[in-house]
Amino acid sequence: MLTKLILAIMPKLPQSFIWKFSKKYIVGKTLDKALEVSKSMNDDGYIITIDLLGEFIKDRSEAEQTKEDYLEIVEALHKHNIKGGISVKPTFFGLLIDEELCFTNIREVVRKANEYNIFVRIDMEDSSCTDRELEIYEKLHVEFPGIVGIVLQAYLHRTYDDIERLQKIHTTENPINIRLCKGIYIEDKSIAYQSYEDINNNFIKLLDKLFEIRAYVGIATHDKNLVKAAYELLEKHEVSKSLYEFQMLYGVETRLRKRIHNQGHLMKVYLPFGKDWFGYCVRRLQENPNMVSDIIKSIFK
Ligand code: FDA
Figure 1 (cartoon, rainbow, N blue to C red):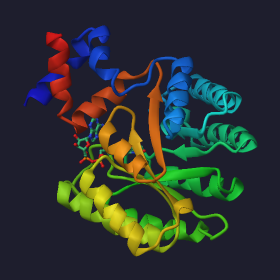
Figure 2 (figure 1 turned 60 degrees about the vertical axis):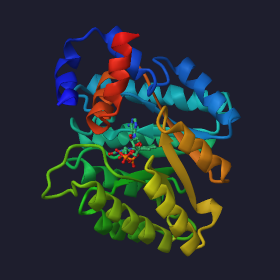
Figure 3 (figure 1 turned 180 degrees about the vertical axis):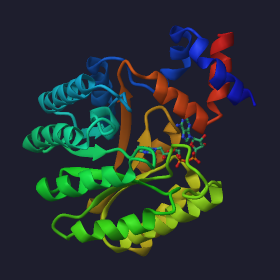
Figure 4 (figure 1 turned 45 degrees about the horizontal axis):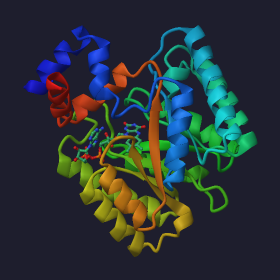
């Protein structure tokens, strides 16, 4: 109820106020700030993936700008010797305007990243994009071995079949690279599990399958129960350290993050930055009502 109310009034609140509680989850508004945080994360032993905020654009010139911005990020990661890569959202590269344009734009960024051996993760967006985003991945995986990965969402009923589909491009020399997460968009119950239990059960089933086929897996969760289940599956399949990492979002569950890292697992932190932070924060709020308490604290601070 309170979350709904806050979501409804958010667009009317001054951005400076919303920034007060959002900044916990956004590394900053500029690339310089993102690089500074990346370096300090690297110093603490974490690898990173940088996400320039923005999505669902409707203008070709914006897609061009996204490509240029990401090329600059790739150059900067190389120049500053940052351990990590980038995450890209195809709708920010023009997926909804022209699929070919989007593919060409992302491919150009991947080509540059490949020169420097910098990893590129294709984020997964809502279910209207799933097939098209898988197709982009399939092409780039074959053209740039070891450089590109995709995201699969455990809430979607279709995901087990998607893994089987991706097995066609999966080899020991060039394993598919999957970030497995629960899924953040609001999807209909005809295509997506809705309850915590169903989503978690499917997450575990999918993780089991990915380990079994020896895919590279980014286990992306802040859920202690899933981390525990992942530990059990890592043991069951005797997964080599070269075939998995854990992943968490900046600002979320930092104690758990530290614990996993201290237990000797590779941990990648997702660092969102940029001017377009508002939509990202609204989604975090829809997903995680605990953030309401952050907002209330900001009101009274
Ligand atoms: P769950 O939501 O059950 O949370 C477990 C615990 O963490 C709870 O205590 C909760 O309060 C806290 N928590 C979780 N998320 C939080 C948040 N955002 N802010 C504050 N506290 C939070 N989704 C997608 O559809 N496409 C994608 O490409 C990606 N990419 C991605 C990358 C990485 C590195 C991560 C970690 C996640 C994503 N996601 C995503 C988001 C993912 O689908 C999912 O919505 C969130 O990770 C929340 O699910 P959890 O598994 O963390 O469990």
